[in-house]
Image 1 (cartoon, rainbow, N blue to C red):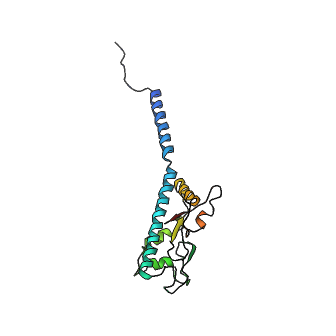
Image 2 (cartoon, rainbow, N blue to C red):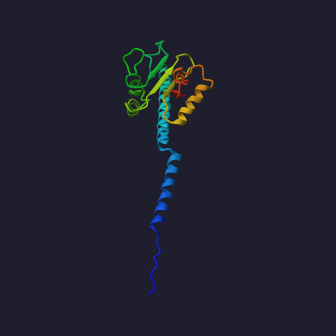
Amino acid sequence: MPAKIYKAFTMIELLIVIAVLGILAVAVLSAINPIEQINRSRDTGNRSDSEQLISAIDRYYANNGFYPWTTGASDTATALAWTKVNTAWKDSGGSTGVLGKLSQSGTEELKASFIDRISGTTYNFLYAQNNGLQGSSTYVCFLPKSASFKTDASTRCAGTLPTDYPPTPCAGAGGTPPVVYTCLP
């Protein structure tokens, strides 16, 4: 009686297939670099939050005729030095919180949940600056975490900057590695 022939993979064939799949998985993971992807998504979120804050400041100015970091239309202290955006940010009178002005009843330019998020201790803080001159932009900046955002920030600092661009974002551009901020607008 002839021996039965079984059709199946041998152990060596299975190990070879598993090794090839493992090599492909490592190659795919290294190509997409998950840490860089996470950092890029966080930077994109910071950019979106910066745009939202700038829009809220612009709407507040359009509705009230003065910036939220001033005490009113007669306040001549319209310049805003490099300032960390959090709940401790006060107007020029030192008594009213700027983020509170942007979220208070009547203006409601920002939601309380947005303010809570950007003021959280684990958030990559935003910084604001405006030189206070007629026609100047309000800049909101953050320290990028992803390589692509760092490259964009370094490229911007190496180029011709607007005259009202804050000096702080590019102050560390000459270091190794360069420390530059991504600023909007």
